[in-house]
Picture 1 (cartoon, rainbow, N blue to C red):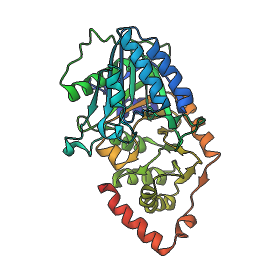
Picture 2: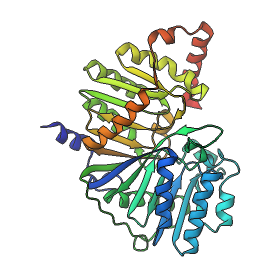
Picture 3: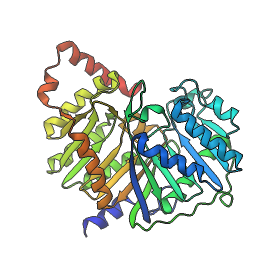
Length: 382
């Protein structure tokens, strides 16, 4: 059996239920940073004829957020049906909260996991999706905030990657949004009122991956299965790297089989996270994995490419919160051209990256090693 069939059978099960059906004739295009992602998203909103569904983790009330709010408000005035879903906790990370302006502009929105349900705070709504008229979709890791436009002044510039989607996956994206809207509001969206038909000339084989309290740890399962199939190379691009023991063991086993493992993480990251993942990185370096620290801008991009043929992109970080608790949305794509385009983007980031070595880790002072070990033990609880 050839590698393609193995990937299709092992990684893309056709179970006929939400988020698990495989689809051909899709087209995915990578959009880097707000400079490339926001203009086509705003253009799609401006050209909407019937419906707009938008979900995000963070939605800033800043110059970029204002562009989206104004575009959505104009769509409402044109009698376009608009629904906006924002994570309640994530909205607090941008001040003032965007909900005030959405309410003033008569844009229908709901906060997912409201703060008066503290038992749900550990599960963040981390999905980012925009579906317009069921014909085009946008998804990935990018929130709606000014700091993703890295060529313009902001307090903390953040590089990121988003994807424009055409084809049958767009209808599936709306099905996910509709399910999330039902969960948050109890309101069932009529699919007859929300058209969901899209086609593309491309022949990409792809499906979406749902993770969260409502759909299990699917992204984590896909990652571990993909690592078992890696024969030549596995490339991980993630802003946060703190996987559990099972994923770590799969990385080590893939490396021991002779696969080249390369992990690209930002050099400039949250200090507590940097302390926590340092002990884990040493174990991987001993096994032969390469770890590159990208910079100088913090890179929030996420991609996972195996053997130059299979890719996984979306919102999931390689940390315990994303892999176990958050509501996440990803896509796996079996297309060598798409994988090659992702690898080119990763290679561009490598040119300004610093390679981590065992010697660099061992040069830490004694109190730094103790601090990192304590952070490593406590971080999964944060």
